[in-house]
Length: 323
Ligand code: PBG
Image (cartoon, rainbow, N blue to C red; front, side, top):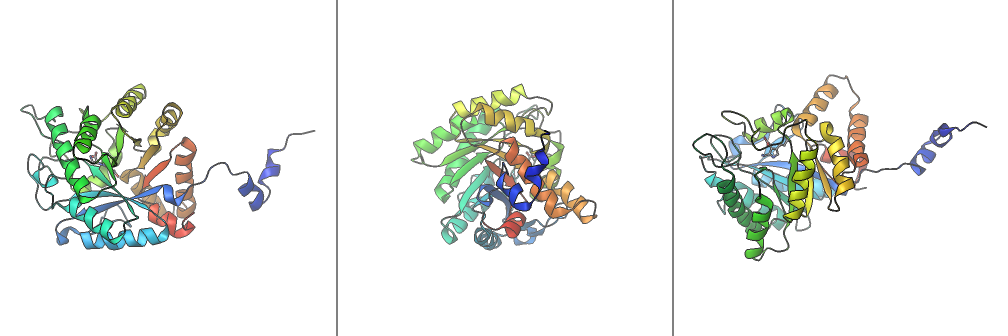
């Protein structure tokens, strides 16, 4: 007698029968870049297939996504004006606040998640308020984030996703939301966010490249894993409803550890650089696009991700529908 695992791979129906993991379209989140100035709208050269939208354009895009079965979007704002203290991020009529209102008015059932950070709103491109040493001042930045979160909540956001990596921000945001009566708004914390080269195309898309230095004093050092557990545990203790690992591909071990350690939903962010490197290979004919994208997303599910934030969400839904 010989054990023959190949028996269960013989036909498509058999393979489907024993398939262990499935990518669900309703677990995908499509990031959307929303611009305040119409002249900033249009395709992003380093991210083929992805565009920046005006608020009206974002509503149309959200409508298309929803019809295809993608039920969640993650908003990033690109404001018309920047300053040292990210004032345009606190504006109740700022670009993200207006986009939240417009999308929720047009599509009440679309889940609207707002990325909460300051790097798109500061003229220096760092994620918060700088001190005299040119480093981001933690507690002043946390206070600013909590104020901004209230304006997103007032606009009708469903989920707030802080991506700044300041210490103590989840608790501060939770307390501020609760104090203003927004007890039902969830926090999806970018908990294990690494100082990654894979954010390159995003920074072009969002105009958020630091004008000096880098983000290594607040984002995590790529070789660290125990520290990711510590960051995630802190965010859960501080009241995060779900936690995130970012980037995705180089950090699938962290996704697995997160899934095995915590009870809250685990999100993974398949970031801009991961998107662009695959698109570049597809454009060159070096790799078969549809199969590679499906395999990539299946890998995130297999690693333990419950929520996948990916620029491929629309493309996946177009091919597979709402399943
Ligand atoms: C804001 C933020 C970034 C990304 C998400 N939120 C950029 C950064 O930290 O520099 C990256 C997303 C991507 O690369 O797709 N802080």
